[in-house]
Length: 372
Ligand code: EPU
Image (cartoon, rainbow, N blue to C red; front, side):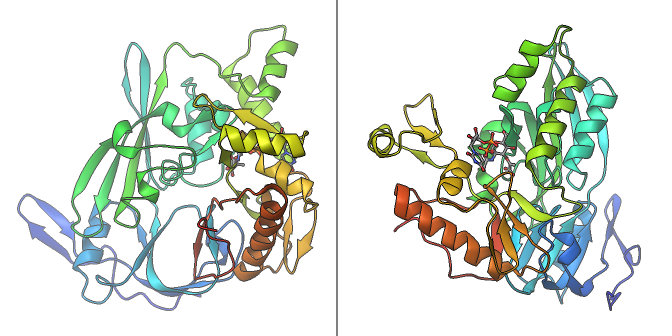
């Protein structure tokens, strides 16, 4: 039970010049985060505010009690591991809205509030004959979290469909628009994990869906679908195939807690790859345009015998070794202990350090550091 309504959210509004600005927000205290993270890990937040627009952030900054607390921005909770309680203010992003902003000759521009479900957005676009996001179906999490780690799957990543986004600065309450070059997207990476980490909250994201629609079929399962099909492929046909591939490999979030892929696929140099491939001829790899090699972390983990194994309440998914799961009552520290044991054995056998994808909050000393 939430135990405090300190302010009335629609309560006192201050007149500043032309428009009204909220001067107060509803602050929830000692909030249970278990249902607010897809791993289902137990943790409490000292304070939590649900942010529905920029004015909520400005009201937080102006608040004497919570204005100076450390803050953590939470979207769908699908990319976090809570290892303890948070002595912080959690900003739960709930900015709503789905709109077709513009129809250009070469693209549709769609805008979504950061609090919308990512998969909900994919379905919304397809239902309106606005194709282009079908390869990114069923990715858990919110629209606002999507650019942070540049979500990607089945040959497409968010950066490929990105137009711009709006942020509100947490120190000043000022708003800004950032374009593709500003966001410095990389593989599961962006400026929001680096220079701007913890400094701003994404409120709205605009996506660019190219016209005419062209299917993205590079991924083997989709190339097979294209080869088998007699009729031309449709966006919905691709969407359906991706949903069924994901459901067959990944745990059902309604039944088993997880944060999707737990580790990034590591990238190594051509020289390191050649030496490794001599010792490990079966190693699954993909050559990159710059000459480096990307390895399949799931293969490395499976090769070390981890697939389907458990440690405490945490486990390795039995159909996709890259996904760590909550076997029921896992605590964040058990997930991290399992992650560290996997890192150690992959490092010992392959000399490759796996880097976790999720953000770890609440402290941990278990993981190997990249400097090793
Ligand atoms: N593999 C194994 N054993 C496993 C898992 C994978 O041998 O247990 C090998 C297979 O040979 C397969 C290769 O690894 O050919 C690649 O596996 P898969 O196609 O399942 O993709 P992935 O590299 O494991 C990445 C993303 C997923 C995304 C899929 C599909 C990362 C970290 N993960 O996984 O993203 O859905 O590709 O595009 O890049 C996520 O980030 O949460 C996520 C699920």
